[in-house]
Amino acid sequence: MAIRTARTAWNGTLTEGGGQVELTSSKVGTYDVSFPKRAADDAGGTTSPEELIAAAHSSCYAMQLSALVGEAGGTPVALDVTADVTLAPDPAGGFQISGIALRVRGEVEGLDEAGFLKAAQDAKATCPVSKALTGTTITLDAALES
Image 1 (cartoon, rainbow, N blue to C red):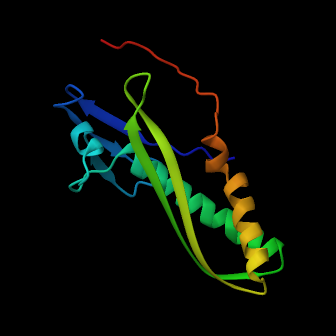
Image 2 (image 1 turned 45 degrees about the vertical axis):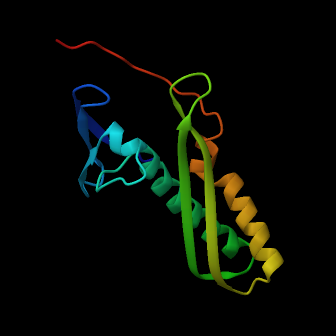
């Protein structure tokens, strides 16, 4: 299966530093990141890990829902999916992703509302990004370079 890669180059401290995240596999762009803008209401042209997770989740969910609608005998004409990822203080210290709200509006032929709602619920449970966000083991390979 495919492996996709992103790379971040960071300079400086958390509160005064900044970086650039590069979408290495697709080569579609490099985007600025900074912690102050990550935690601000207005991102000011800067992306964040939460926005990138939202992009991954909304696109993965749309793909999975289109597959499940087809399996149920329907034809997806249009799906509009939004994922809101919330960054909040963690009671244990630091920050955490406190929730993800998926929103979908669909135009589907060949399925009634109950069939669409079932496919939508099943897609939420089975899209690979949803699965990854439910307690996936995280590994680390760290090295100090001079």
